[in-house]
Image (tube, rainbow, N blue to C red; front, side, top):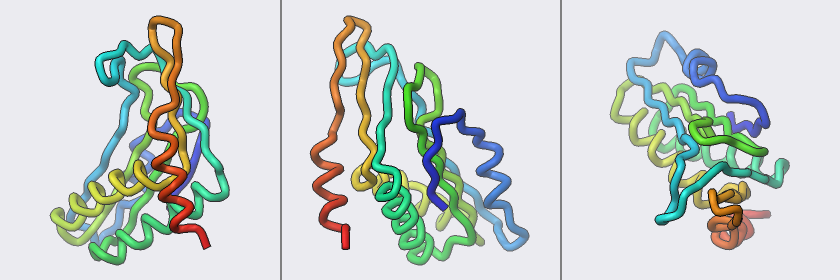
Length: 147
């Protein structure tokens, strides 16, 4: 399940959501807002999304990767709105019968979500300027997957 939220993400809730008696392995990823990017000091971030398409694409990615890696359960939550340094921007939780599958699926999920889901990041720098980061690549790849 892929979800967008403008609320604080609770990683424990995602862990609990994928817990299953058949699972012997668990992997998670938390993407945090950091204070720098490409040599510039970052003050905060802002995420915008096209919700209907982001949900559809995010769920497609999770379903495909779960099938490829024999995953029991997977959940991903991505923030939208204005985030401060240290906030969790994205959290992924994956359970599988074995740890290798959980690790591989979690890694594939974050890489694919970052490159294809229509979520755009605007960085606010400490010098008062802003910049949208990697918007064009995301929208081009999503268009290729659209029906």
